[in-house]
Image (cartoon, rainbow, N blue to C red; front, side, top):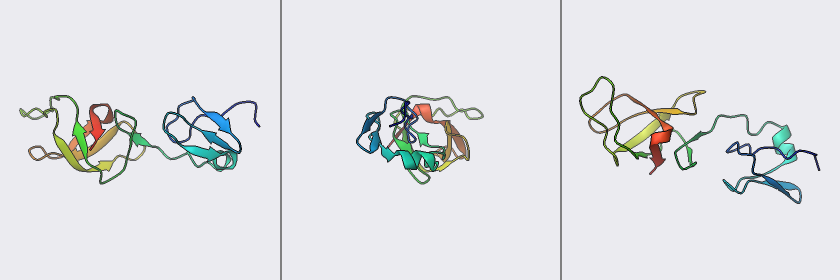
Length: 115
């Protein structure tokens, strides 16, 4: 067993522990072997919502707070559904999408939860 326990490749948190031949992350439930970590299985950027749930292109998200939209007089209200999101390459903090009333939005993931 290595002297240091690696951080979780899925969520990046360091609250991990060994369990036999596996490493386990109690925060997200991800399990991996040391061979997976050595092969670079966690090199991809993971986009997460405010609750830590992973987001993928095409998912739907809900706005958790009223947001002012630059260039528009219409605010984005809490509970607004953003459907069919697009991920921005290399940027885990922002997504692209549109609501029913506003097109071409770039939103921070800290104001979104997975629907």
